[in-house]
Image (cartoon, rainbow, N blue to C red; front, side, top):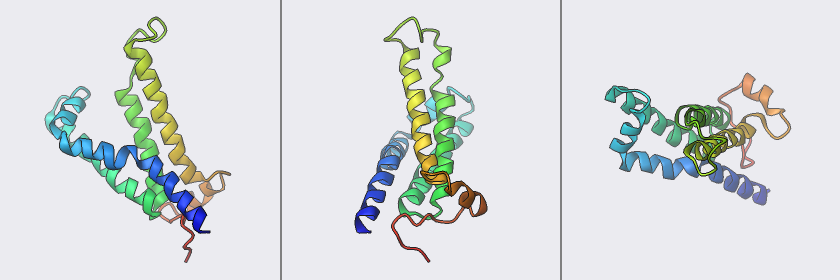
Length: 154
């Protein structure tokens, strides 16, 4: 039972590692740079700053939920959506025009990053639905309930 809990913690920590601490810390330490990057999508600085703050909140709060097991399905669902949204907004490989013509081009690099974002999101969806899909009904019935990943059940 202890080994299963340790394994669950390691897997969950690995899933959120990109967001907490690294991406969240990058946003905090380089906030102006992150806002300028967001301004490539939306020009008004306050809107771009709001986007970065919303992303920061998702990365911190939802990562802690996934790690702790508190409302972990809901948190994983939000992060999965965040992965898909950031892929669509920031990894627009189709706009580069060189996906099939230049193996070293920007389109190809963005394509792989796009797929990585979607794959990471799919990993979070495994927390939502479970390995056998049976967790989907539990998520839909009680979206903020814990999966009790470390064995402590009420």
